[in-house]
Length: 80
Image (cartoon, rainbow, N blue to C red):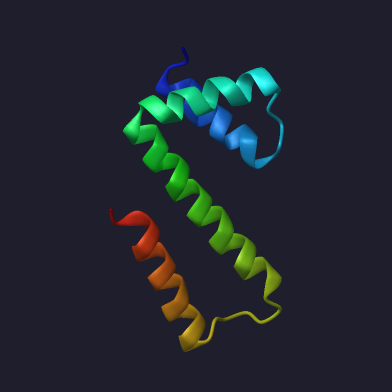
């Protein structure tokens, strides 16, 4: 079993698609057992998705509607 530090390292590697099958299984098992790391994993996914959305936009600022949409997604995902 991996510890929480190792799990967070694997979560970062997973973003870059650099996990072996064995590492992925270890991470999934840890996330199944550890609520804190599972929450970190979900938060991390929301942040990555939000940044990806921002990068797709060609403008330098978000519209009011886009900002509200991001707040809704963050509240939905981050507040249990």
